[in-house]
Image (cartoon, rainbow, N blue to C red; front, side, top):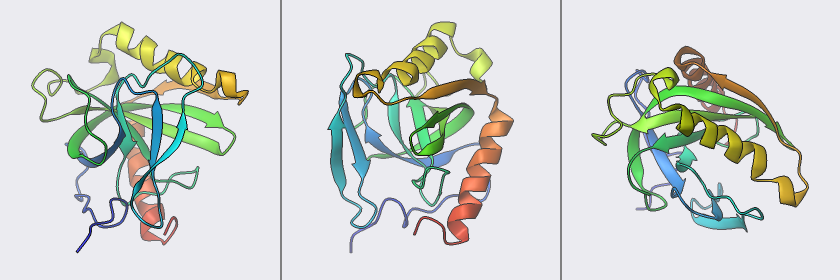
Length: 178
């Protein structure tokens, strides 16, 4: 029996401490992978056009449906790059709001609760300022050479991130994104 990473992973009722996260792209990669929604397999979407790399492990929260029609994106800060399709536990610290050609596109910023170097962080304000600059700069630049417009409106706090996760969960439960 195979497990579909979007539909078959339980999300706890209380999302304040952690949410399950499926990693699609390891930190440091130039490859943009996405889970293929019909099959659950990982597919290469593209190689990044710019001389940038993913500044954190990047994936999605299962059983969510975001504004862009995909599961809700999440960046997981931790010491090591993580293999694609790895399931881990992430604590939301806040998020980054951007708009691209598909519309609104939230990126939840989190830490891996099982990484002792990052597990103590509870909010974006506690992170080193340089990490925040790297995240912001990556999303402002990564589609530039594709001639695609991306508007980054800035970071928001943990409470707003939890609201967005809850709203994305509710959209999924209503049948959106299936």
